[in-house]
Each structure stands twice: as structure tokens, then as C-alpha cells.
Length: 211
Image (cartoon, rainbow, N blue to C red; front, side, top):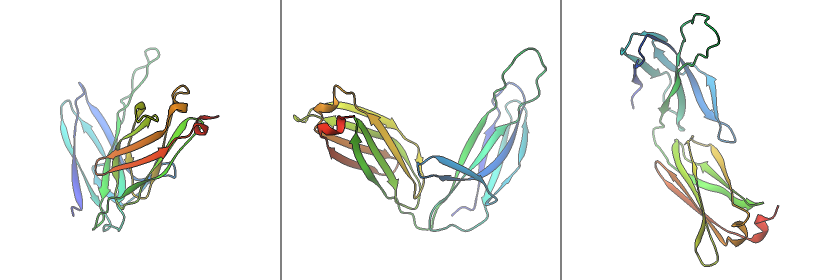
């Protein structure tokens, strides 16, 4: 229900640090890749800060519009503005940049997900995870376990995850070693998120290992 919030930023560098702030609407495309577009939905202040050593400052941000039926997502990027360096041979300037997520939750939240594609072809397992709810969740891991005809586990692979926004989906793939694949009889999939756990299974056939 909060219409505004505060972000505390601390300069832990040995010298001064100058940063600027930019806000973007955060969406995900058909492949689940993050997309950013400039927006005026979020009000924030200040837009630029000059820190002294060990100085702590607060950035305040607020939302302009009321919540919608689906969660709105944004990122407030805090970017270092590197100070000019004297030309003394070749050097590389590395600037700090990180994005703080901002979530405008719907009045009634629904957490819902499913595995809407599970298959194996040419020895590659494909798992598509779909967020069918109206708010985000974080995929902590996607675990693929393969068992032989004796129900013995002969293959395990854990894939790392990321945010999956409302209405978005992401495809995870992993390849089974050629010497293991023909012996598979069953594949079990477990998708662990910060709110729910999704499971699926696939009966494996030798033809799924063929190129």
C-alpha cells in the first residue's frame, strides 16, 4: 500500500563518488530476457549525488499511478560518473552500475506458475517455465534428474534462475551426455522459486537421444 519508498546508498570507496539515477520500466520478452524502456511512472529525487568518503545518502522514489490488476515492475539504476583521469598511458575505467527493482503490486496477488513445455530432442532437455500469475517470482533453481529403468538416478543437472515477471516465460535447456542418454527411462523436473515449487516428468525414449 506504500506509494513511496527510500533507498540508502553508501560510498565505500576511498575517495569521492558521483552517481546519477535513471528509472526504466522493466519487462521481459518472449524468451524471458529483460527489456528496459524509459518511463515517467516513477518520481525520484535526487537525480544526481556527489558522495564524500564513507558518506551515506538517501534516494526517495514514488509511484505516479494507482496499482493495476497485474504487477508493474521497474528498475532504478544508480550509475557512477567516473572522474576524468589524466592521460598517463593506457588505462581502463570501470564504473559502478546497479539496478534496484521496484514492484507495484496489484490489490489482489495471485502467485501461479506451470511448466508448459517439457521435452527432449537430440539429447537436449528443454523446460519452459511460465508465470501465469499477476506478480513476479524468483526462480532459484531448475533441477533435471534422469533415472534408468531400475529407477536409479544416473543424471543430475541444476540450472540457475532469475526473476520471472508476471505473464512471462523462460526456456531452460541442458544436454545429457551421449553415453548416459540412451539409458534414460524417466526425467524428473523440479523448479524451485521463492514462493512455489513446480514439478514435471517425461518418459524418455532412445529416439530422443538421436541427432
